[in-house]
Image (tube, rainbow, N blue to C red):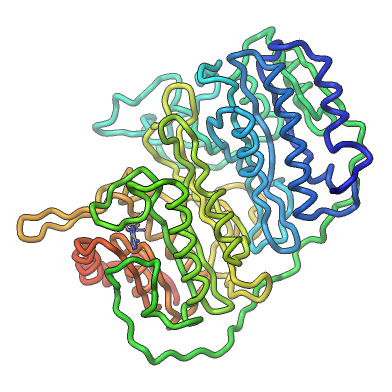
Length: 529
Ligand SMILES: C[S@@+](CC[C@H](N)C(=O)[O-])C[C@H]1O[C@@H](n2cnc3c(N)ncnc32)[C@H](O)[C@@H]1O
C-alpha cells in the first residue's frame, strides 16, 4: 500500500464537504491527476496513477452530493505518456465516474495546439473533456454554442434542407472553429481554454447558477464563470505542483529500417472462417494489422458464429482477446496493430469500447502508442436534443515493442487543418466518409441478390496507416475484412492484402472491389509509393 503525506485528494474532499447538498448546477475542472501523483512521490507509475484514480472516486462521490439533480460535470483530462506507453486517462476517469453512478453523456475532443507534449510518434493535438450528468434529466441548451453552417449555408444541402436551422447547426463533440465563405473553408480557428470553458458554461447553466471548480489553482473557470454572470465556487489544492516538466520531450522511438524478411508462402486473399484461429498465417510474418471489429450488440452480420451478436459482453471481449492473441503471434516485432472503434450508447448506457479494447490488448502484450482521433466533419445527428452530435471516432495504435517499431512519419502531411503553427504529423485526422454509415452503402447485385455492407471504413484512413507503418511487399492483414477495404487499399499500394471474414457473401463484394476499384484507386490514391 502506498502511503502519501496527503490522501491524494484529502484536502479537496475536506473543502468539498463544506459545500451544501444539491447547490451546484455545474462542475467544471481541469484534473491535475498526474501532477498530484508526481508531487506526492516525485515519480509517476501505473500503480500510483491507479491508486490516485481509486481516491478520485471519493471526490466524485462528493461531486454527486453537491450537484443539483439536473446538474452536469465537465472534466478536462488528457492522455499521458508513461515511458513510451500511453495511459488512456480520459477513459479511465470516465469508467470511474460511471462506477460511482454518473451518466457519461459524451466525450468532447478539443483540438488543442497546446495539448500536453507526448513522447509518442505523433504531435498531440487533442484534449479530452468528459461530459457527465447526475441523472437522466439534465440542464442542457445547445443554442448558445451552435456552429455556423459551412456548406452553402446549409450543412446538409440538397434533399436535406429541412435540417437547416437559422441559429446554426447542431454543435458536435469535436471542438474547433471553422471560418468559411460560400462553402469553402478559409481557416480553422483554435479555441482558447477560456472559450472552451465558456462553451461548457453556456450549454449547462443559466445566469445566477453556481459553478464549482475543484482545482481552481489549475484553471480559469472562476474568471469565465464570473464574466458570464454565474456564481463561482471553488476549492484550492494544498499541494504544490512541480514547475518543471516531469518527462523529457521527444526521443525518437521508431526505426526506419526493418530486419530483412522473406516469405515465399502464397496466401488466399480472404479466409472465410473465424479469425479466432488464423492458423494459415505463420508466426511473425505480418507487418501490419488494420481492422474495425464488430461492435457488441449493435449489428447482425447474418452469419453464425459472428463475434458481438447474441452473446454476453464478457464473451465478446474474451473472443476479441483471442483474435488479438493471434494478431500478436503473426505480427513481426516491428509490426503494429491499428483498431478503429468508437464509444456507443446502447440502451441508454455509454459503452466505452476503446477502453476495454485497450485493456484486453495490453493483457496480450501490446503497447498502446497513441490514440488517433478520426474527425468526421459530416455526420448524422444521432445523439438526441440534449447532447452533442457525434463527430469523431478513435483509432488505437498498438505496437509489439516499445521502441524500434516501424514508422514512417514523412508519409503523412502535417495537418488537415488550416492554421499557423502546424509542425509535424498530428494525432487528429480529418477524413470524410464516402461510403459506410453516413455515406453510400457498398453493395453488389449478383443474380438479383443484393449484397451490401454498411459498416465500411474510409479508404483514406486505411491508406494513411499503411503508408505510415508498412513498406511495399509487406503483408497487411484485416481479421474482420467485411467489404475488404483494407485488402483493396493494401493491394493498390503494393502490399499483400490478406483478410478473414465469416460471411461468405461479402467475398463477392471484395472480389468486385478488387476487380473494379484497384485501377481506379491507384489514380485516386495519387501516391508516390
Ligand atoms: C465492422 S465490420 C468490418 C468492415 C470493414 N472494415 C470494411 O471496411 O468493410 C466487421 C466484420 O466482421 C465480421 N465478423 C464477425 N465475426 C467474425 C469472426 N469471428 N471472424 C471473422 N469475421 C467476423 C462481420 O461479418 C463483419 O463483416
